[in-house]
Length: 340
Ligand SMILES: NC(=O)c1ccc[n+]([C@@H]2O[C@H](COP(=O)([O-])OP(=O)(O)OC[C@H]3O[C@@H](n4cnc5c(N)ncnc54)[C@H](OP(=O)(O)O)[C@@H]3O)[C@@H](O)[C@H]2O)c1
Image (tube, rainbow, N blue to C red):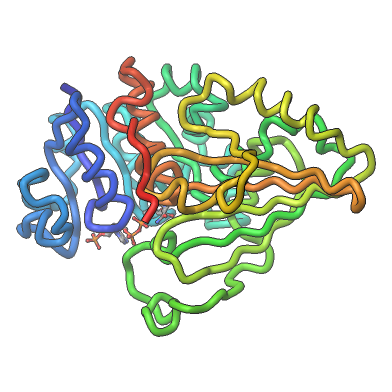
């Protein structure tokens, strides 16, 4: 059994991670931390976990790291790096925040703040198994990707060779759980539901990951908050001359994803589910990708959908854990989502 500790377990990614860990056949959750809920049952805060995670929240203590094989960090960015600085080398770490996703300290500083341990950035592996599987197996520090970044990168990855002379524009729509469990005015039900709100017209932090991982620069992104609780839907427009035919694009997608368990190419005959749809992925670890070639307008349109808390966070973290510990990659994750 892999013994794990979860730091920041009272939030949304922490809760989803605990749910998935509780049904994983090779994992024992040894401790879960929270600052606000020390001494309370985990299931007082995550009622769905009653009878599955029957332990209490504790304070984070460095010495507790000795009792586990793996620590998951489900903390806000800038908080994870303080802990990684303290424990790197003593235990395997999967960090769900953005603190180790970027290789360049100056890019991190531009989008976040000054890094407290920039010397460790080079040891972190960007935890997207479909791209970095072999490095993940050998790593002891995984930077789990962002939810939007995962959707975008998986949508574009097979096509990177085509993108150099193109303009790429990304439109993101995401659900409220992507903002975490801490309350803010924009997250109150009355303000957030039944609307579409542009919350980041430009300079979204996840774009830095996309550029670095795919090695492209001609790309921009706008992100909208929409009235669903889970899900990220990316519509990616690629403009330029010489857009390949549908057949060629199919070939590129198939060459990368035929063997991938958690990426499904959705390009079917009959609506409404002929292209990726949030309904097809929520509560699962799948990312569905699809495309259309709009020859009349020199445009390729890519669609990518996932559950932000699973393939966009906790599920991907477990996929990474499975790889790091030599387990079957889909262990504990092989189930479909819920349609309604
Ligand atoms: N939500 C998503 O869809 C998603 C997807 C991918 C990645 N992520 C990333 O995953 C991380 C966690 O996100 P989340 O959505 O789970 O956030 P969240 O719901 O706000 O939970 C954050 C957790 O961190 C703890 N925390 C907050 N401030 C802290 C501080 N200053 N020091 C120590 N602990 C602190 C909180 O616990 P206590 O206050 O009880 O200590 C809470 O359990 C973030 O970095 C986020 O960007 C989120």
